[in-house]
Amino acid sequence: MTRLANPPNLDAALKQGLNGHGLTPEEALSLMEGGDLDALLQAASVVCDQSKGRTVTYSKKVFIPLTHLCRDYCGYCTFRADPEGGVPPYMTPEQVLAIAEAGRRAGCKEALFSLGDQPERIFPEAREFLRRRGFESTLDYLEAVTRLVLDKTGLLPHSNPGLMGAENLHRLKNSNVSLGLMIESASPRLLRSGGPHWKAPDKVPTLRLKTIEEAGRLKIAFTTGILMGIGETQQERLDALFAIRGLHEKYGHIQEVIIQPFRAKAGTRMARAPEPSIEDLQRTLAIARLIFGGEMNLQSPPNLASEDYPLLLRAGINDWGGISPVTQDFINPEAAWPQIPILAERTAAAGFVLRERLAIYPEFSSRPGFVDARVQSELQKLRCEDGYARKDS
Ligand code: SF4
Image (cartoon, rainbow, N blue to C red; front, side, top):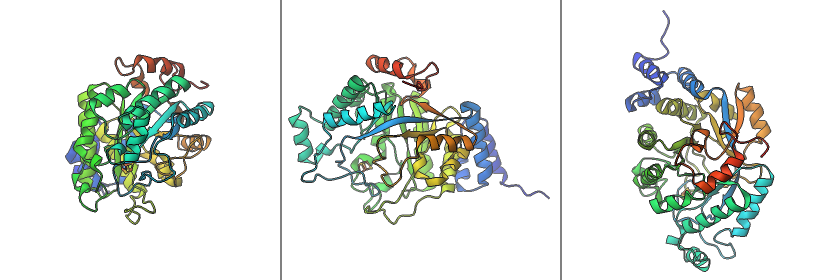
């Protein structure tokens, strides 16, 4: 007698995922809790292939860490810093332009601005820097430097500055081709004393969802996702994915979902916390593919899966995220990005074609109302007819 790989309820859930309508929360949970991983990966691959074919994308970017100051103290973060004598609180406009220009010369098309959240709320050094230059907040300063980079270099800014209100989002849209905010986790439990989001007031899930919702109202192509393995339960992990799906169903503005695995970093409160396995990452990615269906862009960064990263292609991802030939990954400085020719080779060996995209995905770049006119004129210089990056721009 042939033994079934999955009990009937899991097979029904897989079938539901395969029909492309998206899993229900109950089906997703049953697949998260167990069942044959190979069958799950196969279903995710089929759904992905039907919409995305064999193309896997990346964006050639420079990483600009405008400030490491942050009012939050996430238990896993080595990016943040408190003010220190002799260390400037922010990069100056000249420093920002120098990095962006180096990126432009290396063929980059995206200027990724990553920074700490609202440092001026707690650090006088940050307030003083901003006041001397005529800015009230970090987000005001960000708006000015992203405008400068767009105007002077033609690189397309994409900023991840933490929580943003409607007014900030509206103004940042004038100089950013897209914006991002990881929800990280939908679990308020993680904010408890000693938890990963203890002393991190900007990690309250409802506040993060509010920013993502405002971006939807304003028609901003938006990047979000989860940081998996920081202590959330399987149910909580899925709650975050379903919250993102709910907002996307309402506003249609989520251009990609990132699933990022937690990595334990020396010198942090979570230095000894266990990291998720590659199988856990594959399972979560495959379930995310079945939750969102084939149309969503699903990303997992190759540098966080070490040499095993081609295995993620089996789980239905279609994007590697931003790769920089110029700057390091300041969020994960211990994990170098693969060189682009090697990424292309390994992607090809797995049966896929690597293609460069812009910081806005093809399906959003010509959608009415999604790109500001000034940004659109720079975008046109970099995009080819089908919306991907022009080869030799
Ligand atoms: S993860 Fe982001 S919000 Fe949290 S401490 Fe680091 S920089 Fe701040």
